[in-house]
Image 1: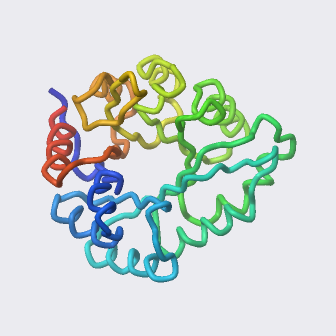
Image 2: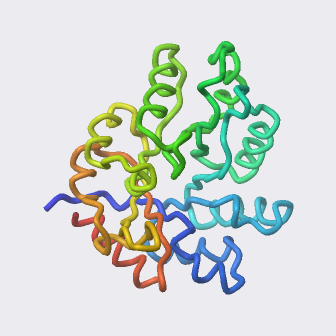
Length: 250
């Protein structure tokens, strides 16, 4: 049995989707996370109903409860072969308001980008916020080949960009999560954990040990002392607690 430090665990607010669907806003989830004894919460931008009100509230609550904020943005960095500076600047300003630690995007149309990568990204590397990309559920942004190409280019140019290894998303691009853990371990700075089950209706995201993802083997491959986020819908807070306990004693 392995033991994970509880301070490394991140709760992505997708775990509270059941409450969100009932009308809860994400500020209500801060106390849930704090009461679970976890020190990190990952805000999902698509769950924000009123940016002008909620962002300041997140910062205030995080300070009161001594929580670190991660910010998940469902958008791509590159569009039509160009870095989407306008939207990235907006997202980074939002991240600055909530005093977040990490911000995450998908890559986008990097294959048609032919400018100087370091110069293009420079303004976004000086916010004091860790910039990360993640393998999502699309072939453009979610295959190991595309992820490795971008991260290798960043490494060659000494560009400090992190990588969020999502254990479940490989199912949507028909790639093996264990094989990709080995391929991407040198780049991985954060891990998203979920379980996935293939059904006749397609892939279904589930709590840990309810699907076919060998997440314990994945954690054994990936770097230790890396933040690990739980990212799957839960019917109740008790299911979130079960996920935390499984992680601590995986």
